[in-house]
Image (cartoon, rainbow, N blue to C red; front, top):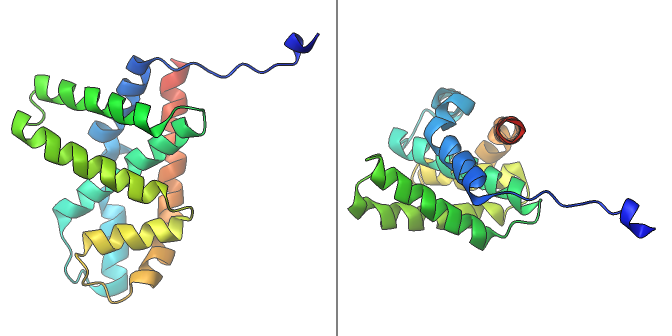
Length: 170
């Protein structure tokens, strides 16, 4: 009797999650380009202390955080996602995307940053933390910057969700 009304939770295989996390890290610039944030930062404070490499890295961390959020909402633990991300890094080493010696520092920074962003519930707070990392603490308009880039972060989250849903539909 109750069996007909039960909803079954989707089951995600590690390989499909690994594929999605790897896809987001490799093709994040196609999901949302760096220039969107460069233009916004230039508009707000003239790129004081701006670091292009950090911008790209931080965008990767924010995008990955949105992927984690997607799977956490569907019952996958962040610890499980960390393990799958570790497998992604192993594959990156095998495919010579990163050097073996760079794996652990990158992995630790990435998982720490993802955890930091996951703890924040609003796009504005994520924006403040994101921009403070990008401009290395030289941003005089930190709280305003977070508020101004929140719509762009919301678009990033929406694009990540669409991309994951498209990947899972295949």
